[in-house]
Length: 299
Image 1 (tube, helix red, strand yellow):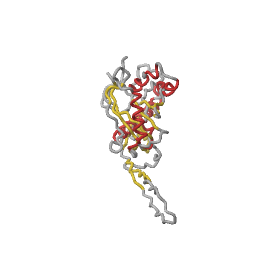
Image 2 (cartoon, rainbow, N blue to C red):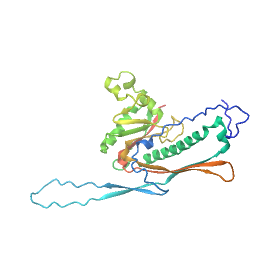
Image 3 (cartoon, one colour):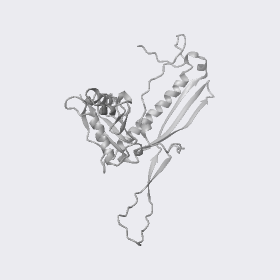
């Protein structure tokens, strides 16, 4: 199919179809699984959000009648969520374009694409923040890399991988309610082929794979999400190592705010500049509430 790039004003003498073709967009999910309770607190680039955590309370295991019980002073630990990331856009819109019925939806689509692309940039940043924030000390919540994920003879079962990630979260006392895992499309495809789901599965284990994306919604307490922003060593959809992350919203905090948007008419022409700015930041404030494994699709 031939494509003919052009500026908006080059609408003559060709006949243009009146309905604009809207771009397909990939799903953005990393921001949706974050703790976002600090949104709205950001004012300017470089702002920081201070997060306080109350330290554990000492529990006495003995009690002596009539003895004085010394009170413990409450202490807090501060963490700083830095707002260091920004994205912006600026495109021109000529006033004569408003009279062209064939392109009347272009302005709306341009705004929609701009907003989406900024959100996509933030989604990728959150994914990288999660990957780098997984606890690798005590506890170590990163599984050994797996290079043969699939359902063939000798392959590592994708279902087993999710169970192992969920077990790491349980060992870190992460609440079961609200756990999730984000997977690349190829991993979803392999998961959908697991024999327990497609052949001799019982009513109970079939229920594990019911509903949701591709007929799969939840595995081993993990609600599953599909994303093309899963961190990877290769841009090819099924090649390279993909970092699959499981966790709880308490493990990652994200804050963003589209702080400025303006449409400014320019004095040197009959057009307006449309500008948008978004500031955001993310912090793996509870690394033990995240778990990860690098997976490569079996050949």
